Image (cartoon, rainbow, N blue to C red; front, side):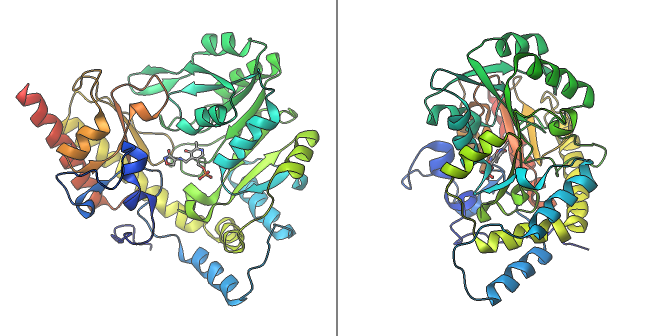
Length: 401
Ligand code: LCS
């Protein structure tokens, strides 16, 4: 029904994906040149999609545009809460109270604020690595120390090292754990058993926990996301973050949903947070949760196929790459240890030698050396060309050694 094969030109839209890669990936300016023109790159980096946002959402934004006045806006209507909470109830069998829901112009800004509100200056933030780098930046921004607990890589399937995690959680200066559920970049959907073990440690040491569930709607069809809030129904020091941004390709609309259980923390939030929303974003988000599900189902089926294709293609063309299909996210996390030396800059190699923009292990804090992360949320034809170029460049390099 929806056409995920359509290739859409994103240039001249001030898109980070097409126009911002020099600064984001290479910390360089416009003078950085490549053997490829910008429009010749296959872009498999930042986590947004090459697919059009569903029409039901665009229609809702159009209807809002037709009202013609765009004054100061904040979510006041009960309809918004109803839309988000029925989504969570229907899909994850999880409830939260209306007063717990606040909105933020993105999960990153919420993390930056919450670290400040929760951690005293000498307290530390814990997260699992490899990690989405903004967990570290949220600590850095607030001059808080951070502590990493490395995940274990079992032939491409990652697990938590609970002993190491508990050791770090036991430090009385470690007061906040930022949890990625499901996990970016490894794609893990944590099981009920894993979540229960984790919850027991969190409770034992009384940690605050922010469960960042931004990727929860994007699971493989054989997987089931469990909100940490469902495992810890009465734990007050838990904040859950969800958003329509990844799910419906709305990152630029900058709206996310943050569920804060603790009343005192909510009060700090309300007294310090810059508390306005973009009216188009509110309309988009509400419509997404009310009417976006049929599109999402088809998207997930398409992504499943892209993962299967990638798995088969890598097995055929880069047999020493270690890759297991991500249980969630549209991001593939591929171990290229057999093909690269420790000091090699992978994003640079693939940009120059393959004309592919991707993210390398160096962008995920630690425990990620010689991995690449590929964004598979693109039309199949684009994916095929990207993989063809990646495998060709690696094989040529190996043959020349
Ligand atoms: N949390 C996680 C775990 C993410 O992966 C991302 C985006 C965000 C938060 C951002 O939330 P926002 O502020 O947009 O609401 N992840 C990206 C990534 O891995 N590459 O580009 C963006």
